[in-house]
Image (tube, rainbow, N blue to C red):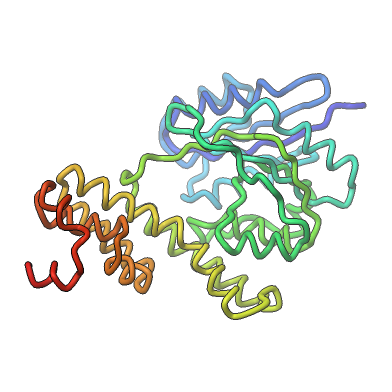
Length: 328
């Protein structure tokens, strides 16, 4: 069998150290049966990026228009492979990637997309938790409902047939968040998606509380993507309650981020930062946050800890809200 050619798109912006690690993980997968064309889509100004691209035999593209959609599109439309794959510059591929996907494509020529599992890791690429997803939706409608309920397939775990470039077009440049989910929903709507149950990529999680503004931008775009497709595909929802649960799932990750950030900051004595995180949680989920401030939850504990000295908060965060208000 002749070598399969896969075009790997790596958007980057001034992160040479992590970029080198990402490219190393890609080149490790090559062999007599697999040829990898790497395309570096550079949104930054670091001169070292081009040097690294040359070092790894990658195609270098400097993309003036900012944003992940513009970067990926610039590379996608000059790619020459049979398939498209992606890797963000702070992540890394695992040795089980690509070949299981190719086997599924060969077994089922009608597939447009194969999704693999993701292993979560910290900034040092130390893994934590179990690979996700553990169980893949059985039908196309089930997958679409799952993707519109908080499951965002990580772009580094994918292999996509090159024909999708023409069939569904590129990433929406108007989106600087949720652009990968938007693109994948267009492909998944065709109903030809496979699943390789093998960990494929190390997905780097930033530390809680270190990227508030980015999270606020992302939730805005994820809401936009949800509204774009959930309302268009009303036939997917078996009840209004299921629709509402799907919306809740879409934004829940962001709500939990600010809830956790609020508690961590309050426990460190960062009162202003904790109160700001509580306010952001309220902005994202007003009714849920109001309920959680009335009951024994992380959000309420963060509020009490932020407003009182730590010792007092430990004793008082179980008090009824009316008593807390009276004390204030």
